[in-house]
Length: 109
Image (cartoon, rainbow, N blue to C red; front, side, top):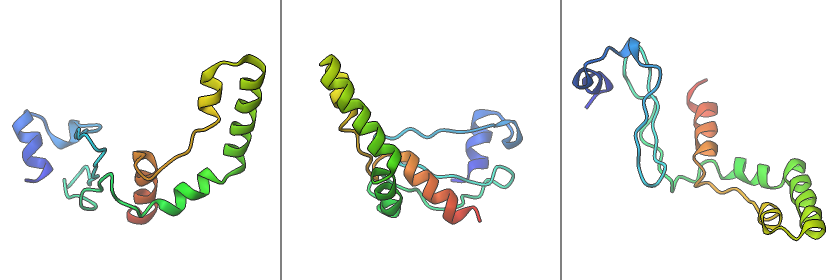
């Protein structure tokens, strides 16, 4: 079914919509042309690994190293478990943001 059909079922015009979310349990998403309703790509699921290099680069970045280091020091000084938890944060391809960034870089050129 096309996005136009969904909009018609909802009683709105495509030009009236700013965004549309489709909720799934596993962060599957798609994007489409607002004017035509034609999808730019098939659904990208939580299992998609095409953003793996982007995730690795973020996890290895200086920013993440600084965050981990600062939070380890904060934990050492305060003994708050939140600080320790924040020092252990790592991203994975299951985070929808990285898959969306990958998609924007590859489909929206």
